[in-house]
Length: 303
Image 1: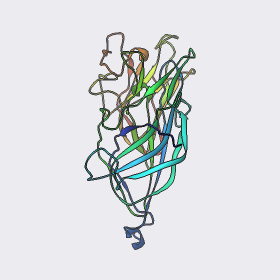
Image 2 (image 1 turned 180 degrees about the vertical axis):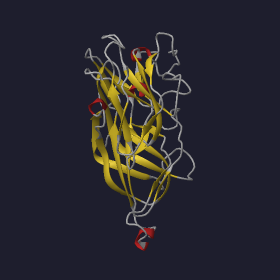
Image 3 (image 1 turned 180 degrees about the horizontal axis):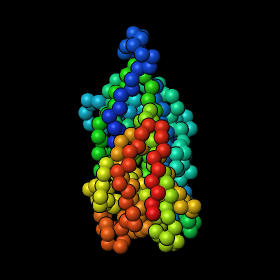
Image 4 (image 1 turned 45 degrees about the vertical axis):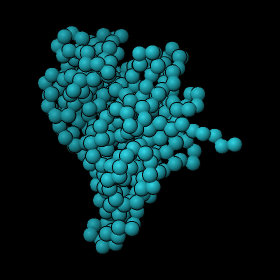
């Protein structure tokens, strides 16, 4: 007897990316029948009070550009794993990643969207475990529900290669619902790993109390008064401060950024704009503009 599985979908906004052909101007690369090759990794930023966050993936669907409706059709590219990948996202932080797809052939062409197929029908397949040992199933919004909006698609050029990194950033993605349940929002940052750098540094002792919940918020461009999670101008990414008062934010595309230190990260509800800069509840220090370049570490120390 065949079992019926319930699949939920995370709709992921994919930045405008082009799979450029390898090998210069070789005319063979213009063969539109040749496949492109795709690799996808998974990384994460931590969430307060959790020891493990398990998510079970059964496949990935790539949605072709120009097709109508939200239901799967024959034009979609469906990659189903022979064995599900049950990943503890908290095991892959500060530049560490898990290979979800490794050098998979896909048809060349225009793609509008990527969907991760997530198992939610079994006990403890997709679950959050807290430091006190309690656990809760994570519900996952389906593809047609609200989440981060699709920015644009990508072009898979014949003979090209593309490596994407999916940053789940659970501080923004895990939300407690009104009835005490938890859901995993599709707040996933997608990075082309062809070009990226990182920001790292230290936090001076005494900026936050020993029992404070410290976190680093990263914003695009120059920001003089940073906003919290849930605001219109919420941070692009977040990161934790280690016990030795160091931090590292990886997979940032080249450009200008601002970093801010909060001592009250545990009070920052991603569903609400609830922390005010300069209120004593907000940010202990804010950098000036920082420039991130490819394959380089940019340093900023909070003092």
